[in-house]
Length: 301
Image (cartoon, rainbow, N blue to C red; front, side, top):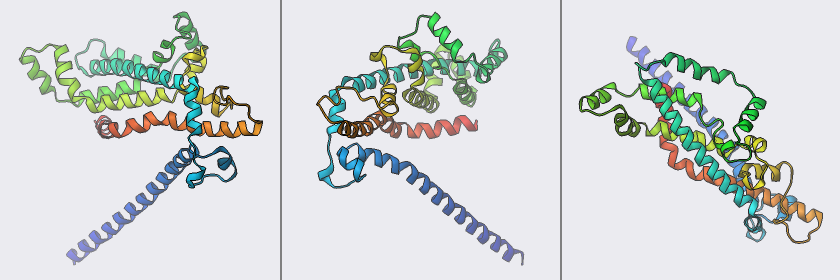
């Protein structure tokens, strides 16, 4: 009798598991569709003729395709210049973020660090309280960083949450490795460079991905701190095209009617979105394995 009940329980549990897995697959499929459909719409819309896009919508007829939107973008220097500026800002921001986050996280992971409790409370305090936009602007202006790339790279480069995540990861590394290295005569700096950093690739890549994506998508700081259009990042240029509907004269140089100009501007919007999304779409497949491992290990430990 007991064996029969036990078997029935196993069968019931397996059916429940299969039902939960089926629900998960359905929900994930819906999420994938919700994400993929807008991406495909924008991608296909960037290759369609403007009159077809506005009147008929998406068309798979090759006769309706054109590269005019991309040609007009590359003929104008504002988007290309903004693209290069965004790469510079994102790479510089990521480098500063990784450097200070890893150093701070490793320092806080050392048990006998002098003033460890004070520094931990000091960092955590900044997660909940800050001066706000106006004091931050006054600080940037007093430091002479207005209208310079440093106004985009330095503020906000160090995230306390990333420091806590990195510290947790470092504390999960075996202390025996550091003790063995000290016995062999290695200094603290050598232990950090030769042992800790090679073992910390997952968490470093996760921080790098977070920092790069965050800075690549940012435009608000540039809108506040930059007046020179030659320093505008791509997202700020794209904001003008999408929200303010300001297409540069170089993109529509020929004398067109107002309606035709609006059609061309609509096509340029889609092409600009595709160009702005390319770096992230190219980066993520290479960072995926580190992203999954780093997030799981850092969060669980």
